[in-house]
Image (tube, rainbow, N blue to C red; front, side, top):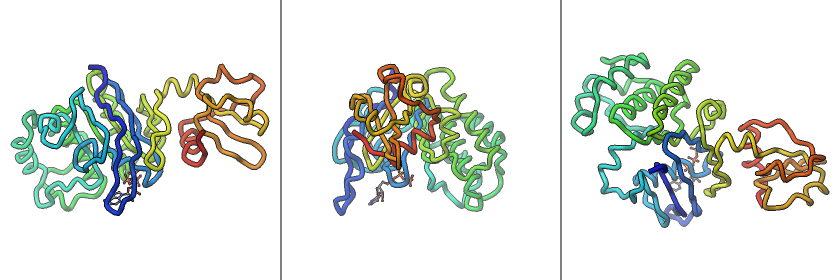
Length: 285
Ligand SMILES: Nc1ncnc2c1ncn2[C@@H]1O[C@H](COP(=O)(O)OP(=O)(O)OP(=O)(O)O)[C@@H](O)[C@H]1O
């Protein structure tokens, strides 16, 4: 099974009729970290909630390890480690007591690994979880997610609120998690440098629609950001255009195959941040 997570044509309306996911499809290959990128309100958390079954869906399918996900499949839930902003870990417990609860909840709970990450993240074991700072709570959530032998991690803004050294440590841990090629991560983040540091696959979402899924390698080697005149833009075949943004006297265009573009057109150096801005602010063919 080379695909860990496959979602197809997911749609979701909240009560009140607002459609927030429109035919969302993407897949995450085994052994990769997928960066999920989109503006506030684009639909990242909703997609993750639907994948996990904490939110209902109005259409589409979610397959985890090749098996259709539904909320009764507790064995699939065991295999997924989750970090959300509001994890609702029991506030009155300390870490020692939490470990005792979680070992009963998870079949594959590994107390040694949990203690390793608690030490790694320098978390206090006797302090009440309710008195943790936001960053400490995020680190604790990550430690929990890593301690029950999950095959897939779903992390919603897990690096937000961490200090630079905490973020660095977490990114190293996440890289290590997929190193054996058997496990995968879906990670949403507004911190593009974090995505740049670890993501192998990039998934861009805007207003509930997937604009692009691409491996980082392909994006950086085959795609290009062009700086065109209006006339040059008209001459580029539309199937090559992933997105474009009109500026006062030029059009910035993201194309999916540099080799098919006349060499006379100006190419710009670009980063994932530039592509994100172009896709989020620009238009699409
Ligand atoms: N329970 C809800 N009821 C109604 N609308 C909701 C609900 N939860 C989310 N939404 C709406 O769904 C859309 C997508 O929200 P979502 O939280 O998935 O975005 P996001 O990409 O995770 O944003 P952010 O980067 O700000 O976390 C937003 O317009 C939001 O207002």
